[in-house]
Image 1 (tube, rainbow, N blue to C red):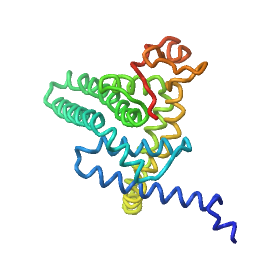
Image 2 (image 1 turned 45 degrees about the horizontal axis):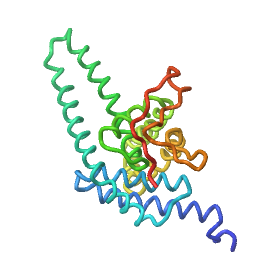
Image 3 (image 1 turned 60 degrees about the vertical axis):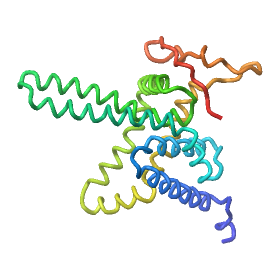
Image 4 (image 1 turned 120 degrees about the vertical axis):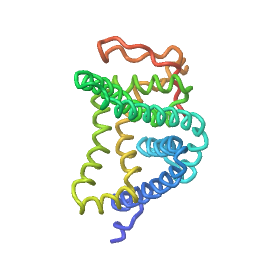
Length: 241
C-alpha cells in the first residue's frame, strides 16, 4: 500500500499529470475570456505541454504566464489577423448563396479550399510560436509549410479535437458529460496529446549542434527526402530555449 502512494509510482504520476492538466486548462480558459488574448493563451498552453512531453516541465503557473507574457505580442497579432480572416471567409461563404446556381458550387469549392488552408494554419501556428522564435510573416509561412509537409501528422492532430467534439455532440447525455470534460481538462488534454505529435514534427526543423557549433537558422533547409524530394527552406527558424 505504501508503494501505491509513493509519488514515483505510476498511479501517482498519472494523478499528478491529470491535476496539472486541469490547472493548465483552467488558466487557459480564464486567459481566453478577453477574446483578444486567445492567441497568447493557446500559445502559452502549448509552451507548457510541449515541455511536458519533452520532460522539461517546471512549475505550471510560472511556465504558463512566462510564455503568455513573452509571446503575447506576436500571438495576439497573429490571432487578430486569423480572426479577421475567418470572418472574411465566413462572409464569402454566406455570399455564395446569392450567386446563380451555376456559379454557386464553384465558388463554394474555392471557399472550401481556402478554409482547408486556414485550418492547417490554425492548427500549427500557435504551437509553432510556442516552440520557435520568428517574426509574424515567417511564422505564418513556416507553420503553413510544416502542416503541409507533414500531412499525415496534421490529419491526426485535427482528428483528435474533431473526434472529441463529435462525441460531445452525439446526444444529450454525452453533451452534459462532454461539456464537463471540456471545462475541466478538454483544451489541455488535446494540447498534451497533440504535443507528442508536434514534438516529432518540430524536431525535423530544430537547429542541431554539429562540431560544437550551432547551425545558422538562415542556412537551415527542410530535409530533401520529404514532399516531392525537394523543399523550399523555412525562413529564419530559431529554437526557443
